[in-house]
Amino acid sequence: MKFNINYKLSDIKKVSKKDINVFTTFACGGGSTMGYKLNGLHVKWVNDIDPQMQKIYTENHHPDNYYLCDIRDLTSKVPKDVIGKVDILDGSPPCSSFSMAGNREKDWGKKKVFREGQAHQTLDDLFFKFLDFADAIKPKVIIAENVKGMLAGNAKTYTRNVMRRFNELGYNVQLFLFNSASMGVPQKRERVFFIASRKELNYPKLVMEFNETPIPFGKIRSAKGKEPTEHAKAVLRYYRKGDNDLGRINLRINKKNTQFTQKILADDQVTNTVTSTATDYRAFDKMECSDEDYTKRQSFPLDYNYMGLNAKYVTGMSVPPIMMAQIVAKILEQWKIK
Figure 1 (cartoon, rainbow, N blue to C red):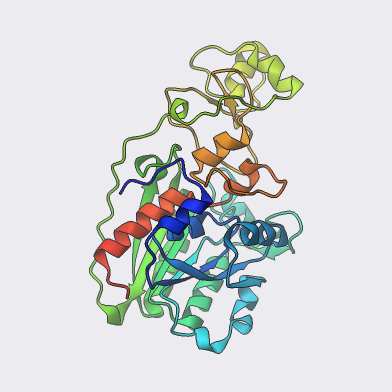
Figure 2: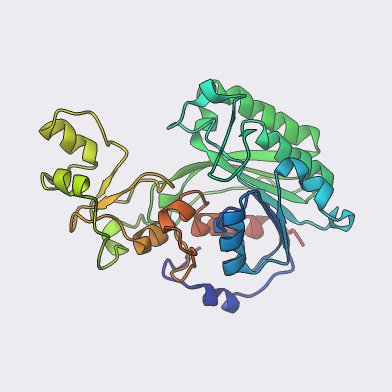
């Protein structure tokens, strides 16, 4: 299905509505929510632990019910009449313990702060806490997103345990690895999705294939970037075609093996994964990516209100809306949820 990358929040009003209710957890800035709304679904219940993200989410989505709390405490806060009323439970449990870019197994079991302002907590058990919540409210369908690192190394055993837990709770589950570049999102972003349905519903196995034409950066790049730091300027002066990060230039000019996470985006290439921390630059004008660049790369609405935070930070922690929209559209084609 085609979803327009150049859309605004007001365009959601034009989408035909469906009588399907969603409970989204780990909602962050609302990327998954936008994906459901692009399909006309009603995101009725929302949960996240971060007050800053709650403000941004509320400003853009005006939720009916928002639960600002740890997933471990969510069951006690949700009214009992929600049980059995949820069509889809959505969640992206924090993934830094499995990220290919992180410390992975070394950090398992350690308490740490996922984002500024949050309490210290262990992160690698949050997926199971999410499933405990699913067991409490009994949704028809569960969609859970996580990083590709769940399929590598010792994390594969963890993933098998997650699959086993789905089965114990009475769900048939399928595991998919998707790349957003083939789904109409102008970015290479590989993510794992667990998609499950209650066994008694007898839904067929999903067939999930996406073959959208990849969108190069030049097709969505904003007219003007942001002024880079003086240090970045000094490095970018030596840019040559084919340099895809500051690290390559640093190695060539300064013999220093640094800044490889700071990418340089060529107009004829699909961009790298947007993250909340790494800064990207534009080969076109040697400028830093603008908020509009990050917004479009993550397929967020053009008029999304980040409430003073930069778009990279908010969108980089979120599921790209059009990525989620494509997945939901396929599910709705194959499963009669209502």
